[in-house]
Image (cartoon, rainbow, N blue to C red; front, side, top):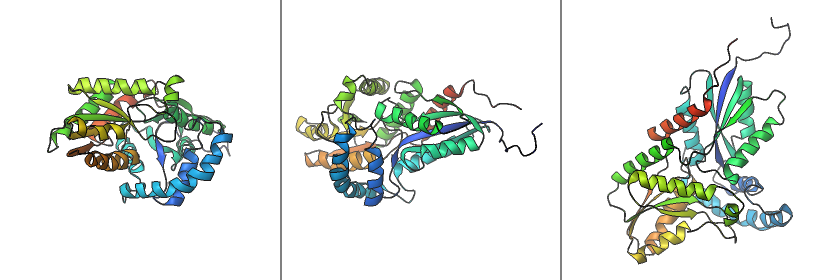
Length: 335
């Protein structure tokens, strides 16, 4: 019997928290500056001593980059808001009820809103005594997967009654992921009005130093591309985008790869971004807009960006498969 005056306790449930990178709240310089300040202050993202990095960040980058980035966001923003937030929200909505009535599915952003701590607390208050953290990064990287988990663990450190936690492992070579990617690419290629001379798999770049320090990201990307190429029965060109700063980054770079192709007789290309679970600034603006412009400027004739899995039927089925696997053994508690 529950004693009089005892705090109300909701019935036990299980939570799934989809986590993606983040986005500013609006496509304006002030919002972008706030977002970049959080993102670029993360020691997992910029592995330079704060005493050397923060003066550069606060004195130069945050006074010059926000306006340029706000313009870029403005080119891909919609009534639903940031594409990354809109797609991640749609993925969470599509998964509601997929694992039974006792499993709640929510979503959060590592940087910006909705914050990881906020949604973790909301799930706990709804009765979730077990929560699966699901950073939606197929390839593991300390600057993405690890920092998302770090933020969640920091929130847990402030909880008196912590839920049990599991974390989604990388799924770069999971048959469900490769199969969904291949089906998505086949559909997109079949819809084109031209046959590409080359298909480029563009992954988000990381400093070369991350590979040398033992981060498996580069190897995960290469394996994803190899398995995808085998599933499609074609050779794929691997490249890495979004270079930042003066440090040496993983190569070859996507922009220089695109610009060099027309001179080699490759004038029709398609680009797919298997490292992104949802379309975002880096795919819709950097690849689909600027990538096209640089390719055409060098003599390219046909260019196509192939969308991410997003909340397509293949993408949601894949998420259901890999999340169900991690939820095995977590049955709703019975009173």
